[in-house]
Amino acid sequence: MTHRQELSAGLAAHVRSTDSVPADAIDRAQARLSARLQQARKPVRAPYRVWWAVTATAVLAVVMMIAGPMITGGGDAFAAVQAHFRHFTTLSMTIAQRLNGQALQDTRTWIDALGIVRTDVGEQLSVIVDAPRGRLLTLLHEPRQAVIAAIPKQDAPIGTDDALQWLEDLRTFKGKATPLPDSRVIDGRSARGWTLKVGGSTLELWADDDGLPLAMRQHGSGGLEIDFRFEFDRPIPPELLSSDPPPGYELMAPDED
Amino acid sequence: MPEFAVSDDPEALARQYGHLVFKAAYRVLGDASLAEDVQQDVFLRLIETWPEAVKSWPAYLSAAAARAAIDVLRRQHRWWRLLPLWQMLAPTTTPSAEDAGLAREQAQRLRAAIARLPRREAQCFGLRYQQDLDIGEIAQLLAMTENNVNVSLHRARRRLEAQLGDAISETTP
Image 1 (tube, chains in turn brown, red):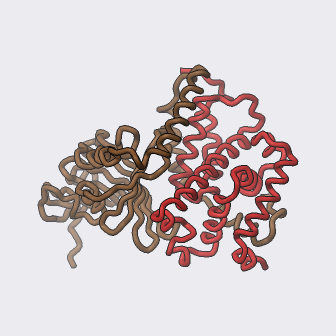
Image 2 (cartoon, one colour; image 1 turned 30 degrees about the vertical axis):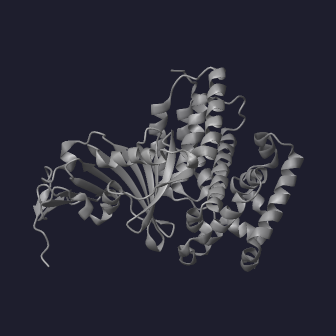
Image 3 (cartoon, chains in turn yellow, brown; image 1 turned 180 degrees about the vertical axis):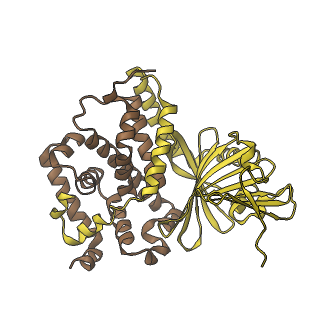
């Protein structure tokens, strides 16, 4: 950066400290951007329609900013958001974790209405928790090995999984969700947010105008932040949630302690 | 669907400059999730309204990202002041800051200080020192005179030096 010589040494050091950008985040963002643009490409609107939309949006934003906290029914709006977590057929999530600002391993998680949960950790490891069948399948993809372990059978297993405790907490949440005063654009969709405390952590939850949850940030203790991106009711290939070892995987005995 | 030439196709531009736009937003915001929102917003706006007579796409897109990101940063700063809960979560007061390393602390302090600048000064500062644009480019992109850009930069530097105060003198060799 050639112009920083105009700054004092101290200020230049502060500016330099903002240069670092996580490479994995760039790649993830680029992939989502491409998908979003393919989805969004549409005819350019006539100028008067653009201006009308801009004006209407601006007016609405001002009204919402001023009147938002006073409008009754905010609870109903959040209830619509909450309902999605209670009544989905499938829920797919991308989960990015950071500890004190340092990126940790990203994961992908899929859940179906039966409560079967699959979590992929990078490209190496998948864990399928099939509580209805009482089994846990671990897949190591590089050596193509599978390990099956027995777990207690349960009808509603989600709340027993520590990593998904927030989901059960959110489903049963009866406290006050505070609307956040501004909107965001997430995956090209306008989103409104709420903040709420569940299970000792603070959640910021963002949903589109229809109450469909799009994203969430969980602030945990000790500097842990977890960012979620949600997709509801997207078809999941059955084999993804199967707790039977896939073809070509060698079944290994579980480690004995 | 409209047909775009290769040179004015938003998707082609996104493939070529998407990384650049994300980085520009991230440097300002220090948050991947928010930077991603800004990145998408910049390219979706191109689909809605195609800009006329862009001389340099990298400069135009970096500036669009930096401006949008600065607006997000400033909005966040307003919220943090308004809401006690968010104030608690603001980067400058995060309890983990002490453990996070000098560079991260500096970045957080600078971002919080930029958020408190007047909008034009924040934009000029970000474009000049985080995106490395020339005065002429900044003037054109922000529809200002070069003289006004220089004045805004001078004021921004002075305000930031004052806001960062002790933190700057600690890092000065």
